[in-house]
Length: 316
Image (cartoon, rainbow, N blue to C red):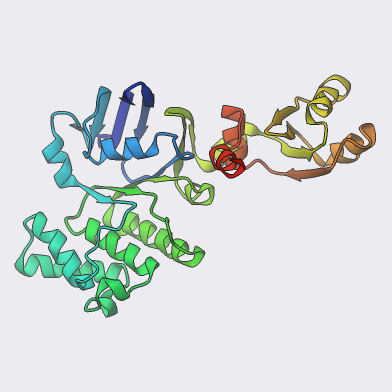
């Protein structure tokens, strides 16, 4: 008999007054997956995380976690999930071991069982030599590892992480993913995270891309890139709309203008570079060729760049 999905959502919606934060979200996350919700700020990730972690009640639709109804089995769900928030939840004046023990007490763990689990996690996350150090003395990467150990002291079946790489340097991010993979392999835990970092989402088994509260794409990272297909050609031009129209009419290329740049996807893109430059003298400021990225997937599904919100704020 197959195990139930770790998370199953059907037509999940949530609003704050007139603003729709989630719109008819439906998907299923398999047990044992590392699954990423990817989206820009305002995409709906934070609201979804709060619902799944039982911080706010669901409004409409159906949500099941580990086979339990999120609306009616909230207490049972809380015993079986671990949560790592974006904002630090550690007591900086306590030691690493004391922070873990404090969390354990909330789940009724004491004595020999607590010490055994604590020591296992200190070993698993390479924190044993830091056990007696105060958290305030640790680097950001080490603190994140303590957060993970704290979130797993009660042996959750599902670990939810909100923007886990926030504030970490590239080396600490790589370490974090090493420990997440180890937690999956050694503890069989399903890992679900939210992120606005394209390179972080790329490490997951599958990615759900959210935009304005809607699910716009769902697949493996390679599957998402393959859905765009071919090669991507990006052209900077002082007359982008005119150039795109010319590419469509004269070369039958499906060019579109996205925030001032001309973008098109075509097989064997390298064969088109010289022809485009020769066909439209003076209209090509710069031209780039590459394989599709997750941002190209986002653009293909939404018609705008992933970081449009940040760019508009910068211009303002």
